[in-house]
Length: 279
Image 1: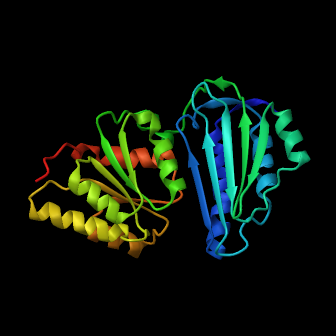
Image 2: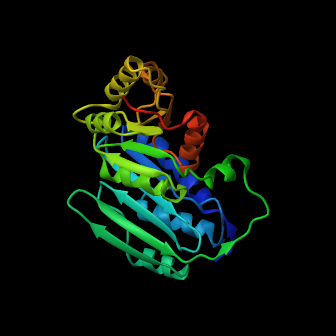
Image 3: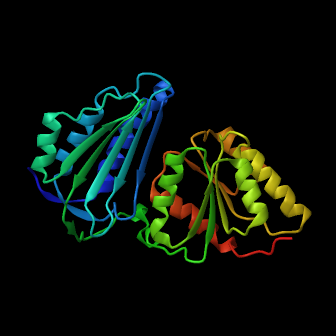
């Protein structure tokens, strides 16, 4: 094995570059997430790790528009590197060959099958290592920035998506409140104080665009300073983004996105965050 320093995030980026366009071709759903620390150095065989992940996923992970694939990479300080792969096709390969390859890297692999999906999880105890330089687009100051004192309202009808956002922000010291749809978000906003809104667009009961319109109308009626709001959505065509901005969002995050993208969007808006009295 070719053991050398590498950044786990670079492996995820290579997979994104291939599987993202594949999913888009058939209208399937692909998401890739990473936690704080994935841009830091680890000792291991990056090529072997990438090969194993591709072997697990297989050459054709998207059968049709109903297919979905989610990659979740975590490399927090003093913790093993973990990779979670969730597929709706239930055809992930977690066979003996994969187990041997992961064992050769000193790790372990487990698989859980559900009625509509399969999850494979790799745990790799790769040693942390300092690298001489950090890519500029990693934005290390933003990655490690504190959001202490910031109250964030998250609205998404997917429990998994809410969990991913909560984990991405877990180390920031922000206070997080999560709800299931736009109506719940509107009700919580009316009864509480928040510094930032992270609203999914496609939600049952009330979508994100309707919710932000209601919020902006109330702010205007009561002369409240607008609460910074980010549209979090897989629907990010130019005309769609324009509609979000017209409705009242300040910016958007196109799924899938990395933690650094989320932090950059939040910190860009943070200058306008402050506690406001609710009438």
